[in-house]
Amino acid sequence: MKRHQTPCYREIQTQQLLNKIFLGTMSGTSYDGIDVCAMLVDSEIKLLHFASYKYPAKLRKEIAQVIEHQTLSLQHYSHLNFHIGLAFAKAINNFIVHHKITKSQISALGLSGQTLWHQPQGKYPFSIQAGDPRVVSKKCEVNVVSDFRNDHIQLGGEGAPLVPAFHHQIFASDEQSRLILNIGGIANYSFLEQSQEFTGSDAGPGNALLDAYCQKYLNCQFDKNGLMARKGCIHLSSLKVMLEHPFFKKRHPKSTGKEVFNLPFIPKTLLKQKPENILATLTELSALTISQSIKKKTKLVNEIIVCGGGINNIFLMERIGYYASIPLRSSDRFGFPPQSIEAMAFGWLAAQRVSEIPLKVGNKSGLLGVTTKFKS
Image 1: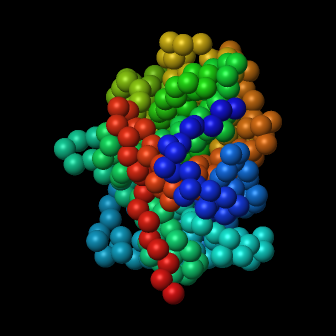
Image 2: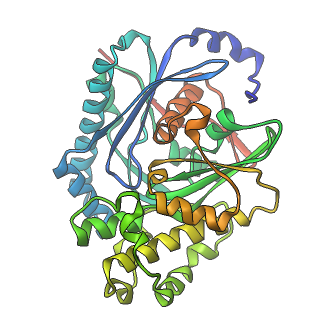
Image 3: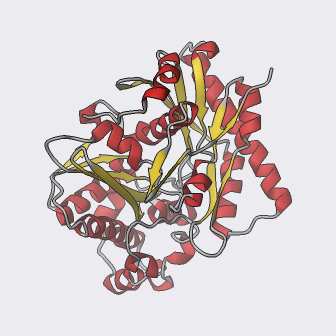
């Protein structure tokens, strides 16, 4: 694997960060909890610790209401921004205590925040990530780097996915081209053309629609291992309707979120079917649109590395493998637990910001993230 070269005038500053720990956090479009990792960013990237923490049930319900109904007053945003910040801070402090990390060892923390709205297109593109970095910095007594997505948009990107540069850092190979598939609520991929170039894009729903249906109608968080979906039959007319959505016709790179792929997206005719048939159809939608994104690559993909919580949906993985006709390998085989990758990406992004290393976004380069320094 090949590491990017950094300019000479950065070397002294980079040397000062050696053996410093960076923390990364992630709460994705499934909003089921907060992932936290500790890592070293040196000549090699090393994961030290990883853990996941659940959101408080009341807060998770509030987040779900905002995302599903797409309404948010300024007063409610202020409330959510503060309390999501508190939830992140509690998870981070529990992580620090449990893993016996000395705070003086921590250089900075990369804060993902919780995506409430993502609108990368239009006259005024923006992305709302709730979780006040000032609250996190004060409660955790660390420097916090946040708001990566809006900087990405200002440079001409989509604000998502943010992980391709990190995927390139840890997975690029001199021998073969790889596609890194991350399946969360939304599925995204990074295409690594050996160790040279990389691109990334969202593909469409991963588990977003499956989980939304289970939580609303079946009183469970998700279809474990895809067992219910495996028993069902695909409702072809509903699948065809969903595949006609404009997002799937857009050119890559593109990004999306639960403001598109939520319960109202599911056709009413499909919701009248048996639960196992609904889940089978939604699983097929995810598998088809993910594999279609892979097949749109005009250059050869030798290997697919899968990460994200969606890797646990065994039936979905089988359906993707069926359509892709390329071996699927877990990121575990490369020493990185599948669910840790996105949190690690935010830790790495924080390290790039602290070291003032610009990242390439399309034809432009710039620094991503805003630093909130801890003031004792």
